[in-house]
Image (cartoon, rainbow, N blue to C red; front, side):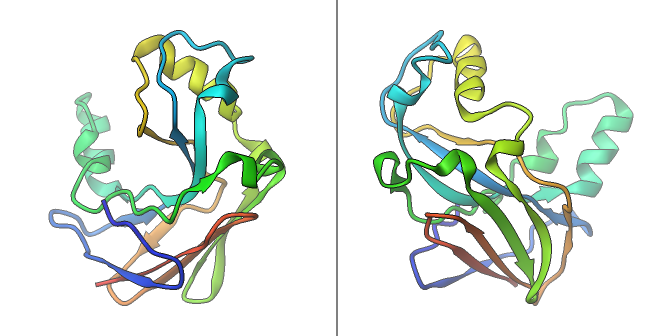
Length: 173
């Protein structure tokens, strides 16, 4: 995982085995208190904080595996596939559910949306995940992305932001 400190532009190495690396900006939820079968109503009690994250995808490998009916984790799970900015405590961003997300690549807006446009809201996501796995303190949940995912190449500069959170900046190498 690449952790990007405030004010820093981190290096994101272009991964092996792909020629089609895609970006997806996402709100990341950091779990502070674990649990299983957490209700939607109680989900907020389990959140420590939030961060800006990128869910990077080797799209060509993902698509190949889908066509073959095989698991496509090789497209999603690789070294440096989930860069994340600093985590902001939840109480410091009470309006996170109304926040705007934006990803710029080389200064041009590629993705833009609102957290409230997620298919499942944060509480629903926590409830669904905790029904399948026991969530643990320190778990990070990447929540989904607005339209506009697309490819990046070596040399591209990515700048992601979510209202109220520390932005993330990366250079693909």
